Amino acid sequence: MTTAAPLPTPAHQLSNPQPSLQPSKSDDVNFQGLPIPRGPVTASLSFYQAPADGSSPYNYVEVPKDGTPQRNFGTDWHDVVIDDLRGQEEKFTLDNNAFAVVSNVPSNEYDFQDDEKIKKVYYPEVEKLLLENLPGAHKVLIFDHTIRRSNPDAPRAPVVRVHIDQTPSSAEERVRLHLPDEAEELLRGRYRIINVWRPLNGPVMAHPLAVADSATVRDEDLIPVEHRYPNRTGQTAAVRYHPGQKWYYWSGMRNEDRLFLKCFDSDELVGAWGRVPHTAFVDPRTPEGAVGRESIEVRALVFG
Image (cartoon, rainbow, N blue to C red):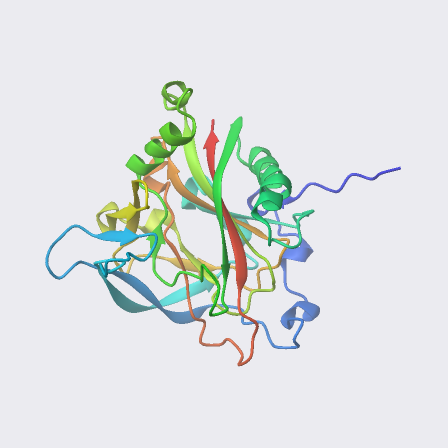
């Protein structure tokens, strides 16, 4: 007889966090025996600095072969207090803050080495997770994923630059690009772009992910950036620093943890907070010799 695995519980639906959300003594160290940094930390984050020549900002997905700079805008570093979500997960929701967490999520994908296997095994798990945890959602289309590894020869490394993956115009373009036959009807209803982020070799020790409470981010601090693919041009958003922004990370994220990042929301009631700036950062408390972070982010269109 097969026993069904218990469904994961969104932290914001808990009146009190489950004991598993709270670090125990056994959670204080990773598999190397190194201490896991926890609690608030002050770290330096890289924000947007406009191009010196006043031109519109751009970023190439692939390094141009003709010597053109991969991006034409600079970085503006600021020391920021980043609070720890661990122990206060229930305070944050996608509608109010544009991020949320889910714990104790099982998966049948362990290797994350083969893209086709990831699509076959992991994508359906993410789709199910989104449908179960986003009220009103009735259709999910996963359109891509990115694996990031900290080793020098990795194709994609953690991004240490504050950004948002989509803008309102690029979100609409995504619907038209991936669902052209249904786009007009789908665009009349609510649609969101949600990233589902998790570590592959948790607990996370190096380059944790920081997120800003979207309710504390001003529209005037978001700058559209041309995101130039080889075959088309999309749009992301860079972020200017503002002292009113509130930043968080989820200490010691495990492989069973999931962080939802909302990049866009067409709902006019919550759309003003429908975008979450995020970035990897260097935690100054990271122990010497700590294993480099590996992670996967899956990007999905969510309808309803």
